[in-house]
Length: 152
Image (tube, rainbow, N blue to C red; front, top):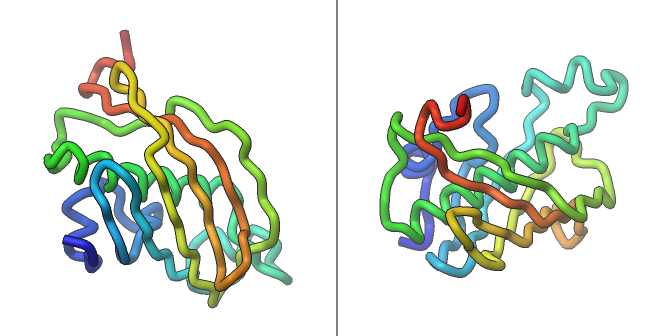
């Protein structure tokens, strides 16, 4: 399954409005890469407070979109659906760079590549583009932990 609509995306992510950052998956090669789309709209709840005269998508939300795309890739690679017994967490963010602002009306194209996996920690190379322009990039680390494991 290459293309995934919003209904299929919701099966792979526990996030919902207002933190759901993936609207569609355009390509997915389990074990390798994913290309996902986030439509940036003016009615998102962060815009009235994040530079109201010139709304800009916060960089942390671009990173969140990358992590959500990575989560779909992990679950597709493992051929499982997430459930309420486990939580997908950030384990680290390296080399994050923001090149240009992302504004309402933009389409954020996210590409995530699996760089490796060791002892349940996945490493990804991520880029975000608007049209032909690179807007952000980062290497992220994520892991899936059983619910309650974060308290130990």
